[in-house]
Image (cartoon, rainbow, N blue to C red; front, side, top):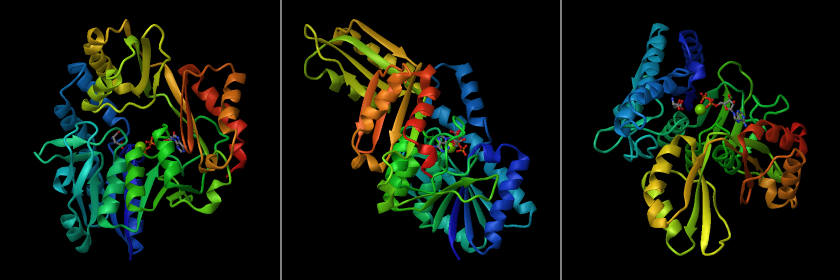
Length: 406
Ligand code: ADP
Ligand code: ASP
Ligand code: MG
């Protein structure tokens, strides 16, 4: 008998019929003799709807209250799924984050999990219950509700799997695995059977929203085997696991694209020690995760600094930088959200040369200008104009022949 954590995303629980479909899948696992802990998201579109309501009240709503609001989406789904399971004759019990408790730090909207108490859940499992946990939410040590960031139900699932020492964490979604690129962008995308934690981490950080980055971090740290598969078919999925020697064969495994980032440019700041420190410390204090940073070569003791950040933080980021405008003697602070970050990822980059050149040449042949570049050992990312995002993805997918790689 195994203990399995299954996570079902928003589309998978999008209406009552789909919740019944999830209940049947969960029940089938229980009938096989395994114990199941289910983690669910809010019904499709619900979190966006709630954000829309809050934005009508205030452009920058109170962050604590925002989390109280957003956590309601998942609370609806756990109750409906638990009721459905009960009506099918199974013992089911729902848990909000605070009831577990799944404890986080107090960073509203992007909280990090610090502890998960497993005793209550394990007691219920022992008594034959199917446990239904609300994804995306937790509670801080003062009792305030927190949320884990968009897509954070994945994190809840993997963290719960790690805490319970589960045998497997299955992420059920609307695609049947991790593909060489978003299958909604090109039909040439093909399913990757097995992918290393490290590659998946880079893909997630580069915008492949099929798995949330912090979920992959958890899986990697606690060695939780994760399978990504479809709620709507019984197809084999993608196993996210330890690196193995065959994985370095291809130089590039996947192309990703992130259109949810924005860019801030601070022009004409003094080129002297302490400037970057002041700006980026303030952004970090506001829990803004900065991604790429570029500082131009200085001219006449002045320089420009550009960086990317989540689009949802653009307003907050501009306000913070604005406070420094006079202190930094900056001539201008501007924000742009019409950018996209395209990335190529692969463990094989460690041993194949010329990958970056091939990427830049392919983009230039399509007339796509590269505004920023960043690299890691197994990833190269370029910021481009958002209108070329899909063209860039298709071009890179073709150039690196990913269609033939699966
Ligand atoms: P859920 O609501 O189940 O959490 P998400 O919408 O967060 O689902 O993630 C699934 C989506 O991720 C897919 O519909 C697909 O468009 C997108 N996606 C992006 N990159 C990839 C990829 N490389 N492989 C599979 N899906 C991807
Ligand atoms: N409901 C949350 C969101 O839409 C969390 C999740 O679905 O993973 O981002
Ligand atoms: Mg998701």
